[in-house]
Length: 317
Image (cartoon, rainbow, N blue to C red; front, top):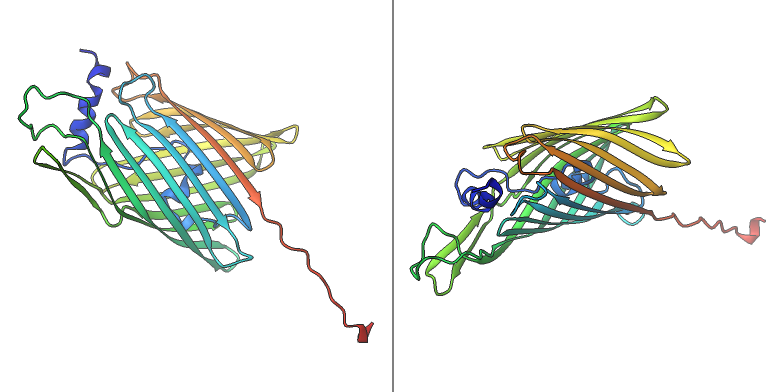
């Protein structure tokens, strides 16, 4: 039997195994998705702006049951109204028969540290939903506890993070699924309780920009993710340059024991970015996977400060 035809059972044996580790989505363009894993980032590197970012990832193309992820983040720094950044983070992750959805409302409180930069301390509070919808048919009417049946459950979820933004660098430390919620439901007519235990995840991120390099600039970034059982890290670098007043970039990315890839992007209009990445699989799926594709759309809108009206007392004219 070909590997791609057995992938879904293998995925399920991992999902429902106590040794399963990474539950959060995996995004190559994580530099566009920092606020969903670190609420401290929300609005920190913006001023009187609202940004919306959408990411779609098709992982291990042409492999049945492979992960697919969709992300939508909206964040704002409305300093003229109140101190802090607010944001809404949503993502959908599908693997085989399983589906996971997260919706979080973020708030980040900025603390200016001398002339060095800004430290954002943030929290995200919302819900997590998990469900499976298997299509297999048991060989008998007797329930098999080793085979999960369809169910869906929802519970509270929370993230916390600290994010520091300097002039040309950033660093962040965060944790997701702080409550480690248990999503549980009794399946009618079967007599079995289905459950899914969320695990707390930890993220360490950092990056630096090098300006005035070959008539452009270069940035380098790293993201380490772990649940204290398994870990993975991403390293990428991009070169930015300008052609006809349009900014473009190209770069390379590496994920340990999983993939290497290319990063491409451009800004067709001011404050609008289109990005793309292609990961070349280097793990055990290399013989059946055609790589992973990712598309990014980001747009920022600046809120103009109101014009100051100077009123003079006629007595002093």
